[in-house]
Image 1: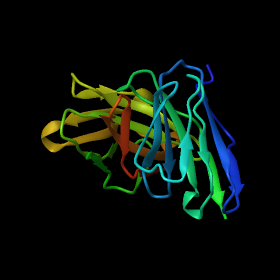
Image 2 (image 1 turned 60 degrees about the horizontal axis):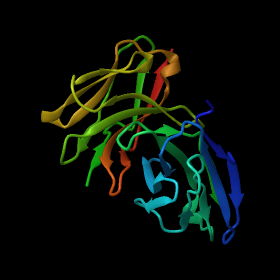
Image 3 (image 1 turned 60 degrees about the vertical axis):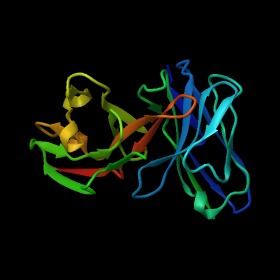
Length: 112
Length: 116
């Protein structure tokens, strides 16, 4: 199993550009999550999904959108990139709602 | 709302010495507690978790943690640190989300440096 994979690993965006961060898991997990990690801070939950077709907002959803058309994939969309979205983004998945979450390697995004 | 405090931002220990990383949480019900480790440029790896039962839990890489409800603490320990343990360590508390799922609230992390 590859676990949770994320692409790209690094990306530089100009203000106002858009992009999609990809996340795929091969563990047949129902629950998937997007977090962002800023320097000196813990991870903050952006969006989560409890299954295909079902998504909901986390703590810091503004400026982001998600979709979940399959169990495996949970892409995160940035429509109008802003410098405040410069961060490291982690995708995670879990089998059970209360189970441990398995994290991808992250995407380091810089918006200039 | 739940919260996690890791009071030590940086800790330096000598290789072979014992280690204790502190974690205090705030949560209204019985918490799900986790310790994750993050090496530079990597994702987070689960070290251990507490859901219920025995308050002393064993994890990978020789780590253990003890849940103390009276102190709202979940400190991570290792009897003898190896140079490869140098990394950032995150404590997290889990809470159920509306509609299912489990929101992890993380502490700000403790950066561990190991001196040879």
